[in-house]
Length: 463
Ligand SMILES: Cc1cc2nc3c(=O)[nH]c(=O)nc-3n(C[C@H](O)[C@H](O)[C@H](O)COP(=O)(O)OP(=O)(O)OC[C@H]3O[C@@H](n4cnc5c(N)ncnc54)[C@H](O)[C@@H]3O)c2cc1C
Image (cartoon, rainbow, N blue to C red):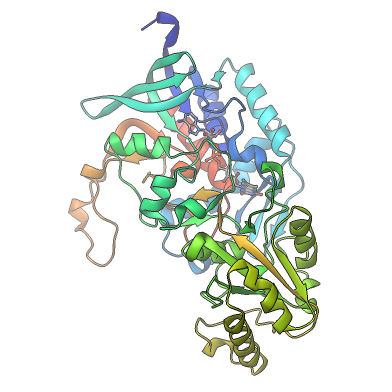
């Protein structure tokens, strides 16, 4: 190989999004020589497209209640260190809005994604680090089970990097339909990608090939349902097209049936996850004039989102009777008679205070669909990041499958057998690591910030 296309560094970071940039800064500040490879021609990943709200839960007890089944040690690390990580970010030139509470159980601070991206890149440059865009990880270089670098590709061919430590920060596997079909849903080809287009599981697959252990809950992901085709919109309109009001609405699948408790989980992300398993990963959100105006924590009023969907050319129906609404929804493939039956029985149950007796139950926000005009929007499940991923310890060292024991209930290994081994020199951060969110959500940027810092620090120390 041409010498110019070979590099030798202390720490190689793969992925230049939130986690990768934070890992690079943390490693540089420990005195390491750092190279970041980024697959896209633009650095910033999904962070750049995000709302920039860096938040997680305030209390560990609330995490246990709202996001059970994660890795408690990793979740507690996030809760315990978000505050100091935000201070760290601010002192590196990222402008953060004042501290705020979110959703009654969360807290954090908001950043401007373009400013945050620019500040982190500037810091990397000032410390002597290098970022190579349009260069993608293909596979890890290993010897005797230890990682020694990576083979990547840019448009001119292979680039080989020898490294004392490697940090995987490629942002999850949501952009890979084959992995989505394997782990998440048989309707993977219908799901919208609500994220950067480059996170196709490259870090996850390369690590598995090198013997890494994966977490449970590989079927879970975070996202919000967005306006269905034929709507046209771009990546900077993902927020506008997200129907976050749905925990106050009624969700029907293409058979005209309810399929989930719309108000379960931490927010609409839970319902969105369930829609992914319904035919064509599609649902209709139905609500009345009262819900159209109902305020909630997570986003704009339902009527505002509906109008945006209409303007984007999305499927929207409004009518003065449930019969006329159902007739309009027939064009989307929902059988009108069944839609009317479902809405009537839902209305009867919630009006009688018996939402919990419905199948599926409706336990919270049990608002009836009674006051005209009635509205319906067709939405598709949309995936922002996968929640399952690589198993890592608190230093973000990637665990080796062959030296780990299963975490599945009920049979647990004897304490003496719990000699968990990591793959030497391999670290992971951000959405490449599993064990934080699963069916419910504890923040994506916060996870990337905290794990990126931890991985970069440990990778530099070991290098
Ligand atoms: C519309 C939207 C709104 C959001 N709002 C919020 C919010 O307000 N709060 C919040 O907490 N979270 C939010 N998120 C989620 C948040 O952006 C992610 O959780 C976070 O960016 C994850 O960080 P990451 O570094 O793991 O992934 P990313 O930031 O996506 O970075 C991964 C990077 O790896 C690169 N990459 C992929 N494969 C390779 C390869 N083979 N080689 C080299 N590089 C590779 C990608 O191109 C990308 O740049 C939002 C996301 C979106 C899309």
